[in-house]
Image 1 (tube, rainbow, N blue to C red):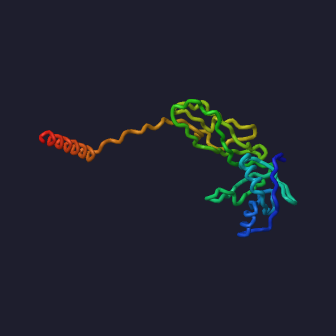
Image 2 (image 1 turned 60 degrees about the vertical axis):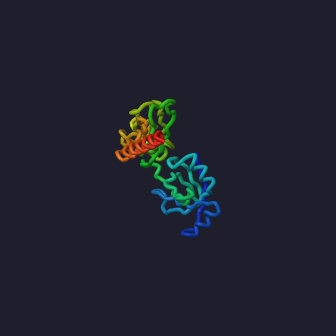
Image 3 (image 1 turned 120 degrees about the vertical axis):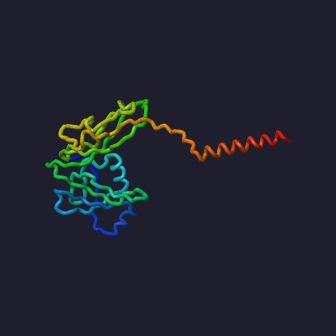
Length: 214
């Protein structure tokens, strides 16, 4: 069982009444999965969850404990307020530890080149992997120090994963690449603008001639 632990409480408050839980600093959630006979309604402390989620993300297996139960789980989904970006509801998925599963794992880029001739763009920040729950990596690190000039790229095939983990995402998929820096071109003068400029020059020349005649 995972050494990482998050505490929860069984809740009886359901439906619209969960708004009161949120006002009290709790986030409602559920525990479900193939090893959970019935979905368990729980709540977790918002501050504790925020710290935990920032540190470990959604692809880390950990132990969720509540009165009368404990299960290894993943954070499958966090519903957020679209404006405040605060968590509103959490789905905890309890897998069968003896069966492989597919899940998305974050890709973390490290050591970008000191001088890049172009624009570095990260195209994918997650890849899908298949593994036993206990083998799912928290994240996959990738060194991008080789990306220095336009045309350089890192592909899924360049990733290194632990034994027992298979990457499902296509190996030809590009994770990050360098493209040529875009040069802003001077806008071409339109015929109308050219005509206006000629007319203005003609007006200035006429004014100059009148001044000399005076």
